[in-house]
Image (tube, rainbow, N blue to C red; front, side, top):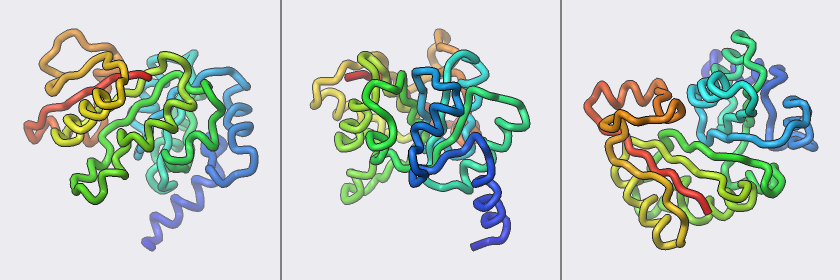
Length: 213
C-alpha cells in the first residue's frame, strides 16, 4: 500500500467526524456527534464528499453523512469539513448493504447516490446501488416519502434504474437524461462533484432519477 494512502487511513481514524461501521454502538456515536437531533441525509459512495459538504452548507440545520467503504477516500471530505468548521456533516466508513444494520427505521430523510460505479456487466448487476437488494435496505431506514436521488453520467445505469422503479411499483418523482438542459434546477441538483465537472467537459450528459417508496 502506498505510504501516502496508509497515512490517510491512519489519520482519518482520529477525526471526530468519521465513524466506522465496525465501531461498537456506531449509531449512538453518530447521533451524539449531531447532538442527538433526528433526521439524516446520506450520500452513498461519497468519495471526496463533494455532495455531502455542499449539501451541508446549503442546509445548515440538517445533518449529512457521507458513506464510503474506503477510509482513504473519505479522508479529504472529513478533513475539509473540519478545516471549514462544517459541524453538520459527518462521514461513515461502511457499506450500502449494511445501512439497515446501522440506522434505525425511519431515521433517514433522504439518500443521494452520486456517480456510483455503474457495474456494466450483467454478472455484476447485483452490485448496482439501485438494485432491488439495496432498495430493500433504503426502504427500511427512510422515513415515509423520503427520496432516493441518483445522479449519473451512465446511460445504462440510468435506464436500469428507471426499469427498477417501474417494475417495483415505486413512485417516480423526477427523471431526466439531460439535467442541465433544464434551467429550473434546485440548489441541490446544481451541486457539481469533481468527476461531474470532468464528465461535462467531455461532453457527457448528466442524468437524474428521483424516486420514493
